[in-house]
Image (tube, rainbow, N blue to C red; front, side, top):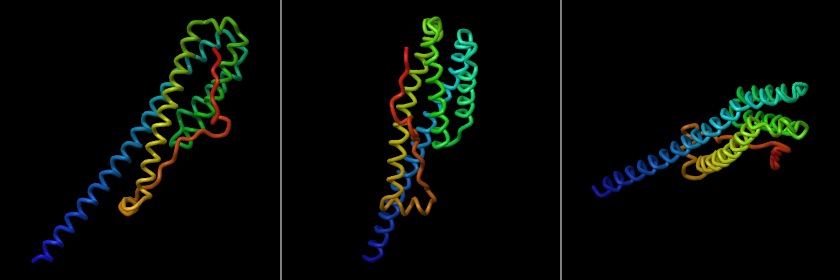
Length: 183
């Protein structure tokens, strides 16, 4: 009788541990997906601002077609990117193209003084800050998730349920440095 009670208690304890670990894994997985959604929201917001910026610049620097075309190509690549690695590469390309557009404002004083251009530049700068915060939050959440699925005892359950490590949203090369936006 005592053995049966101990066995029942042991099964209940193991079951509770399984439930707690499983729920923790699900919560972290959902948090990673929500963090990625926030990055996607900010990247989409930036992509929506770019056509207005390009149209504003076209009016002042029509012969800078190559620069403006590069921005549009980078924007299209960013919109079609899927997953953190592809999105990071597209994000880096778009950031470089935007730097070129902002550099144009130095060559065109009328553009630099245009209130529409200045407002768009300010919006893009604010959006870049939001992207940086969302990226940091996402990477922190991915770190917690990856650690959880790789450490005992949750790695046993994660392995049984095919939980795989997630990719970080990382900047590559020169994009790891600060982005300078000239006003």
